[in-house]
Length: 129
Figure: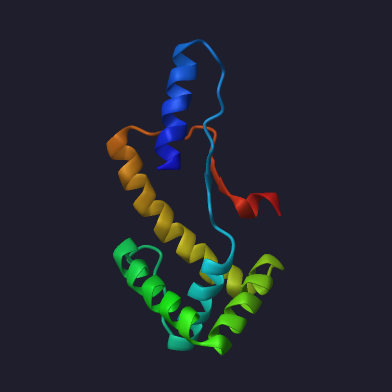
């Protein structure tokens, strides 16, 4: 939703003669990624960034969220995984990059259908690290 609202504002401002920067900021940092990474490690699940679908990631996310809500040890390890991710841990960054690639591929299908473009790029919260 926020992407579509932002694109609409950009279109209006551009039409009115303003110079705008079209950058999409995505939420790519935080507890949800710690949950996903920990779940993937625990279940020995691999992500193929070319073939894994957003639907498959959604199933994994729901299972990870359920486990996060019910299992204090999993919750603690997930939070620790976020710290490793944000600290540059190679294993975490590699798997995280695959998750981002799958997500961006799915986002872009929708954006293309809606004519939403980001000539100035797409970056996440991780950009500011």
